[in-house]
Length: 286
Length: 286
Image (cartoon, rainbow over all chains, first blue to last red; front, top):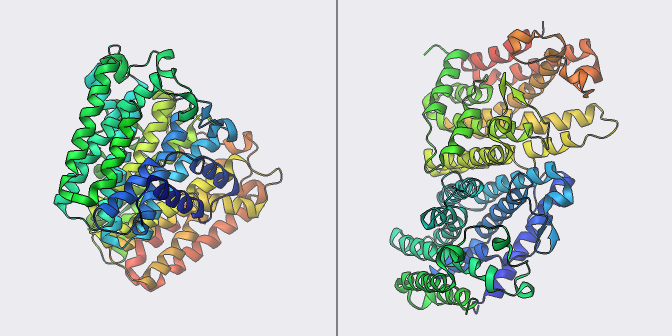
């Protein structure tokens, strides 16, 4: 297979559509699928698949893990959009889950997706890999990771500085991106040394991702992005752009991308796709 | 060790108090511990420990699993109490989590407890047991189990009949009680035959538990129960008492308890504690 983002994305999308939620109630199923299958770039799922291939595994082997990560990502968006949180009414041009199904069903759709993700991991892999994947995903998504990032985001200090912003986005976004890479490698049975390189790639890619995201909110094109821009500024949110200025933010995105690409060196040619993915991300801000 | 409910309960309580949530933010940690350590009967945790002992294991071996089940139970109470769900302001005589910490932090405390429960399982046991426990707990708590039960409870049909009520409480309450028994047995390395008996015990105990709970809401003593009674009637909720009448509800509780006790026969003397637990539960309505 020629590796391409579109091909990996298509694999994720198909696998997610094919997932059944055994015994789920109709209303809950509809709400979960509404948010899970609403499109999206599938960055995390693609990272799982590509990381597995990078370590010498087959992409198919990593599909359940890719689904689990995308399910956790979808749950986090549903809960973050709730009125008590960011109170967002639109996501990818569609009404958010609670607008469409009501708050109670949205909370339960999120709870259902999060819980089901662990069923998928525990039931799709032989025990040592499955247990390892559960540990990676739950640590990345839990209180020390994504949940903690949202906690920080909900009550920013009056003077949110760069250190705080890095910590917040590192937990809120970075942990899951990092875990996606590690999970893909684990599916391929990668050893500790390999995992450490992947972790380093994931950390720097995650940082670059967030800086790029903040820059695109300022300079991006609404049509290509599929979301409204200028939102951060309107909400007076602290971002890498407001704290660093546009030029320094660009420079740091470039630097982080460089670190991410370097981390892939031990993988040689096999790291080419992940390296290109990092550089393509950067290209969007130039 | 002489088996006693109080002793098992104490073990659970201590293990829960001792749990650290690595990397958790202070506010999130406080909210999680507020709801997790608020007392409670620890029925699910006790069932995990006692089932492990019943199958020849040590209670200590099952402590992480007992904690995980209690964390999932605590999360479910936090989310069920939210304004968008049951909108409860008091639980065990204390303000509910969202009243105390606000809605956003309550949602995140629930998300954090649920996610951390799977970390605990994946990291406390050797892989085959850990993966098996994750599968049992996630299936019981997910869309086909507890989440599904809450979905049903949120939109009851106009004419909620006995079949609907049985399905709803079976998912909302029964699944986790059943899983508690299965998880305890799995910690002890029980075989399939043993698991099947435990499952049967868990199913009937769960049914008896719910009928008894409904009866106590009518005939119970507020002081002993630690919660207000007559709430179901005031809310015109369909319960086993409203659908069956008090006498028939009592008879069915007795019948279910009988089935639960019979299921323990293969365990012989080892099943004595679980058998007494079922009978003690029944005694509360006589």
